[in-house]
Image (tube, rainbow, N blue to C red; front, side):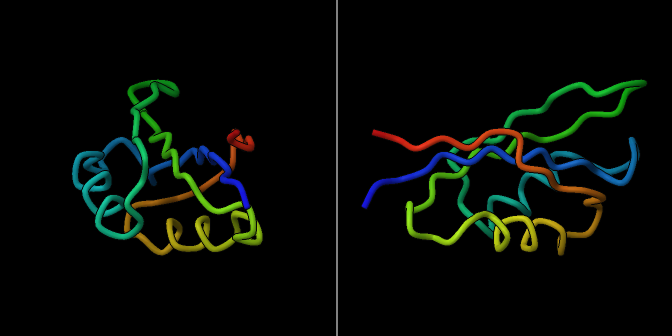
Length: 85
């Protein structure tokens, strides 16, 4: 069994959401490989969350649902998924 690198774009509800607090909550729930801020528009930033999962994990639905449960998260979208050698 191999591993898969998944990058999810986490969109906050607005510019008033504290991204540092959001990042801390994500880290406490899912132990991501990395989290990076990305400017979107007009002061709004998203968080790109990279997580390494087993190849047989059955997809990303569980990760997406877990992130959507966090207060301040408006949307979650998979933006990259690749098998690691």
